[in-house]
Image (cartoon, rainbow, N blue to C red; front, side, top):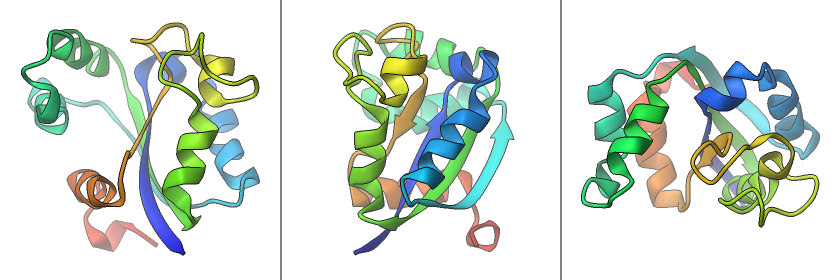
Length: 138
């Protein structure tokens, strides 16, 4: 089934200059980059995007991390895009991520874990709309 999902290359991976390597992995796995841009999230944006976690103890640290530098947000499209992206990312904790996954190769910790990916098709639609007006998705 053709799907769209959101990917965020987080500030730690952007700072390591591995954006191109990560985007290449998406394409090599058969995903098409339908939209992409490099932005710097404001605190308001990061708090709104991660509002689902606002009552959790890690919320402030997550927001602080996500505004610490630029991020690259992308819409990935393809057959089973959401599941494929989550498989490419690997486990949230890079120490538990399978060898060859993005997090195993590029993440430093469970907090600085290189990438974010939508966890459901419903959330993907919400997250894509948060960052991209429809006219920017090709």
